[in-house]
Image 1 (cartoon, rainbow, N blue to C red):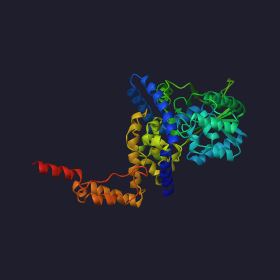
Image 2: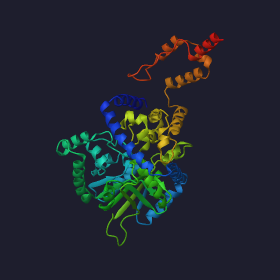
Image 3: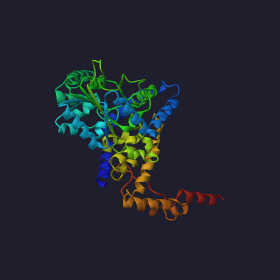
Image 4: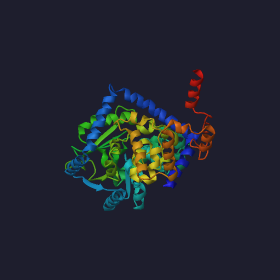
Length: 460
């Protein structure tokens, strides 16, 4: 536990004062803010849309078991195979088995942060299958040997100059190539692999219960080619992605687009309801849907934090969070970063090791304000902190320190019992809470309360 937290604090301190990183993130998030501001203005009543979105996802989560069973029945009727995976190990075991049964050597992958959750690429490479990312952002970080930095924008931490240098190093493309040139280069390179691939792997933005369908929304068209060209289509999706009806997409797709990229709706929107049917010429011959739990059921049992399962992975809370904008995505050391990641990661990876993420929050409430499905994220982080204390996951010094803090601050007379010299001495005993770049302010000899009383006495 101490090692994970210590690394987090070390990495936070380092990246927060990396001027190049700060400049890149500031530039990229500023462009996001501008686009999303325009996207939100398309709504005549955004608050009502968010209320309805929250209701739809709330209804889905409240009746999670029923809608998942409906989804399974409906998509199975159209020839898909549904596999329930309790954890990452079961999911990977099922995936490797499918790859081996179909003698796969190359797979293309698109639209799935959930695959990152189970370390998909590493496991299938060990099984002798090459996994190729086809989303441009994921492709870039895969080339760099990195993980996605952001839920929606995987290479947000890289400038166009960084990417041009990476491509020059890997493919000997011209130095300082433009984004347009590199995009065209990747498009041509990936097209060859779509045709060659034995298996296509996607996630799902939504699982549609009433028709048994997978809803995918994207801007590049690569997800569509990922499930269209290969003979086998594997879907890996968390159980919380369910929505009750196909008609719900009329609200949820634009809501996701507006908060994720600022668009009215993303360019390509697909619904996949099974493998190729009799009489159809196109599409995969086999389709497998792996429904991943991976501690989501544990979150579901929580009185308050279960609301985090409403998340539609738009990334809005990350872009609004002052902590994320300062310490970046990699510092969290988890698949999901920012406010939503800080809520769910302690459940996914263990409260004892990751409860410190719940304290990586200034409780400004901006994440709650921007959430399109009205998840009270900053409150959930406070509930996580409470639970960490109740479970005994705080350090001895922290627990005793908080007890002392509670005792001292519960009465003004206790705070005024000692003067400024004693307070300054006590504050200097521990490590500076403000870090190396700032100094703690000095306490006055007398508190404001004492000075006020003295002034009133002299006045009278």
